[in-house]
Every structure is written in C-alpha cells, then in structure tokens.
Amino acid sequence: MQIDTKFQVSPYLLLFIIIASQVGVGMLSFQRNVAKEAGYDGWISVLLAGMGIQILMFVMYKLVSAADGDIIHIHQKVWGKYLGGLFSLIIIFYFALISLSVLRSYIEIVQVWMFPSLPSWIISSILMLLVYYIISRGFRVVVGICFLSVIFPMLGQLPLFIFPIPYYHIDNLLPVLDHSFSDIISGIKASIYTMAGFEVILMIYPFIRKNQVSQRYAHLGILLTTVLYTMSVLNNFLFFSENQIRKLIWPELTLSKLIHYSFLERFEYIYISMYMLVIIAILATFLWCGSRGLKLVFGVKQKYPLLFLLLFNIAGCQFLTDSESITAYQKWVSYVHLGLFYVYIPILWLIFLIWKRSKVA
Image (cartoon, rainbow, N blue to C red):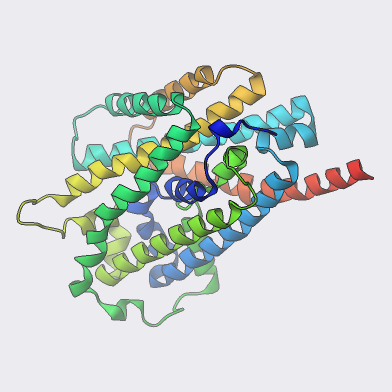
C-alpha cells in the first residue's frame, strides 16, 4: 500500500503520536480505579499493563508490516471485500466510541470544576469544530498537534510531581506485594483502558516513512507513557491514604489544588485548560483514523465520514447526561477495546500468516 511521501511523516514523530494517543483524560482519574482493585500495589499493575502493551504493539507491527498496509487493507486481503468491510466497520466503530468516551469525560470535568451551568452541546460543538479544522488540513497537521500536546501540557504537569514531595508518606507503599495475584490482575484490567490509544498504528502505519525503522519509536512511546502513568500513580499513592484515593473521582485534579503561586491561586483551572490541547490531539487522531477507515471502505471523500463522526460525538454527548451513564459507557467501551485488540488482533495475525503461507504455496 503506497502513500505519497508528501503525506507521510518522519519515523521519530511516531513517538509523539503514540504518547498523544495514550495520554488522555484517564490520566486524571485512573489512580482511583487501580487503587480499588490492587490497593497500593497498583503501580505494579500499571507496569505489567505497559509490558502487555509492548507485546501487543510488537504483534501489531508484525501484522501491518507483513501486509504492508493498514487494518482495512489487511481485512480485505484475509476476509474479502464484503466480510472484510464488515470487520473494518467494527474497528471504525470502536474509534467513534472511544472518541465519544474521551470527549464526554473531558466535558464532565469542565462542567464539574469550572462551568457547572455550561451545556455539553456547546463544549462538544466547539471542540468538534477545532477537530474538523485540524483533520481537514491533513494527517501532517494532526501529527503537529500531537507534538504540541506532548510538549506543552507536560510542562504544566511538572509541578504536580514537585509540590507534593514534602508531604510524601513512603510507608504507604510498604509492604510491597501486599495484595494477591488476582488483585494485581484486576489492577491491570483497570489500567488497560486508560492506556489505550496505541492501536492507532493499525491505521497510520502507511503514513510513516521507513515503516520498519519507526517500530523502535512506537515501543519507546509506550515505554514513556508507561513511566508517566507509573509516576502519576506513585505520586498519588505517596500523597493520599488508600481510603482517600478510593473516594476521589479525579485524584490528579485534587492534587493540583495543592499548587499555589504568588500570582496564581487556582492552578487547577490552568491545568484543565491546558489539558484541552491533549484532548483535541487524541480526538483528532481517533477521528482521523475513523474517517480514513470509512473513506477506504466506502470509497468516498474523507470529509463526509468525518462530518458524520463529528455529529455522532456531539449527539452522543447529549445521551450521556450523568456520571453513572458516563462510567457505564466507559466500562462498556473498555470491554470492546479488550476484545478487539487483546483477543481479535493476535488471532488475525495468526490467520494472516496462514493466509500468506497458503498464497506462497
């Protein structure tokens, strides 16, 4: 599958794409979910989840490099035009679902922490308008936003790792491995959905120059996000008691209230505002993947499926009206993610290898 080089990006930029795709709104709340399952041993679950993602990325690269194309191209080869199109639509549907999950979760934070009376349709419409402008400029612009979303918000996150240090309680982490193996496994499940996003490689692979060389940057990106998530969960565990962190909906935002400057009282407002760049980047990446997939399946211009997906997100936000429905939706999407990428993709890789060998024979 050949893509004109003027639409492709350098291999090292895959590092920023992977980080931008993995670091989303879940960074602000996953500490609570991990603590509920594995207690203070949750940081071990996060590390193990990162190792599992590294293995899965290796499998994905084997799949797309062997086919020299994206997941749509692979499905057409293995399953044929119609059945392959159906499987491709399932993957595309996932990108629509997870983009809605990210969008509605961020809107909830804005409404709870900043603008309680602001309707969700206004925020979603503004964000979708920005996303449309970014995607309509092409894949290279999407990558540029990913780059910015990694650099600037990370600078804003540094104080979160510095200000709590005087209040650390090292004893919180002791004794290590105080929970059962099943608890740690449950913690891994709680971490997997938060660390989702790496699956975009299935769609963007043809747009990366020197595809084989880029694999090291993909694995490096996953390593850095794993380190970031581990540092975040340790930072919260060392500051909050176990009972506290289990009751906090957004531990990271609660921790940000500790930060005060002589010229700035409410740092969390700045933090949430800067996080919008992170959300725009991840939404642009997911919706580019979804609209690109629909373009390939139905043979239409990408702007038409993009408009459909943007309207789907705006409309979907109106049905997720409270925390309970948002949480239930996120849980359902996490099951879809687990089934598609931790079960189906490895099976598809094996099937593709068998199909390729039968063609050679």
